Image 1: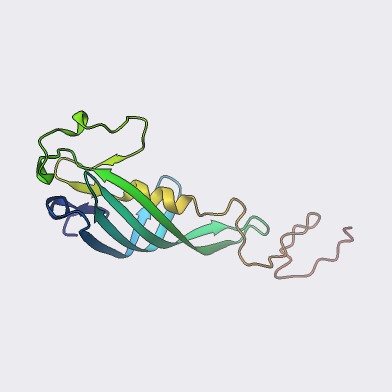
Image 2: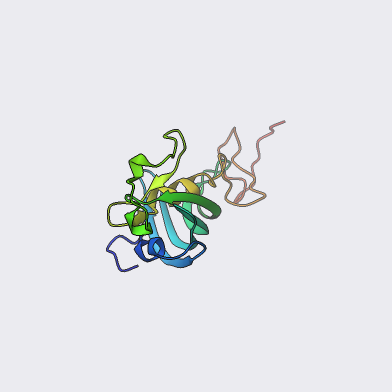
Length: 167
C-alpha cells in the first residue's frame, strides 16, 4: 500500500489477473478517527479474491478504543474485533477483458455492492468504521464485574465502600 491514505488499496493487478487470484493485505498499527470515536492500534488482515466480474474482500479487523463504563462512568480501553466481507466491482470492465461499462452490467441498483474508483483503488475507511462501530457494546463495562456507582452517595463501588442503606 504505497498510497498516502492508509486505507486505500490498489486492486488493478488483481483485476487483470485470473479468477481465483488472491491479494493479501495487512494493515498494522494505524488510527482511524471518526466524528465521535477514535480507533487505535488497528490491525487488519484482508484477502481480496478475484471472482468473475468483481472482487470479494474478506478479513478481520481488531482495534482499541476508549469507552465510558455504563456502570461506574470510568474511562477505559476496549479491544474490539470484527469479521467482514464486502464485494467490489470495477469502474470499467475493460481492465478485466470485458467491453462494457459498469452502468451497463446487470447489477441491480438495490444490491449494496461497492464500486472501485477510476484508478481501481478501494477505500476501506467506511468498511472498517462500520465494522468496528457494530462491535462496540451498547452498555460497555470497564470490567466484567464492575460494581457501579451507589445511587445515593454516588461513590464508585469499585474503589470504596458505601455506608448507605440501599435495599
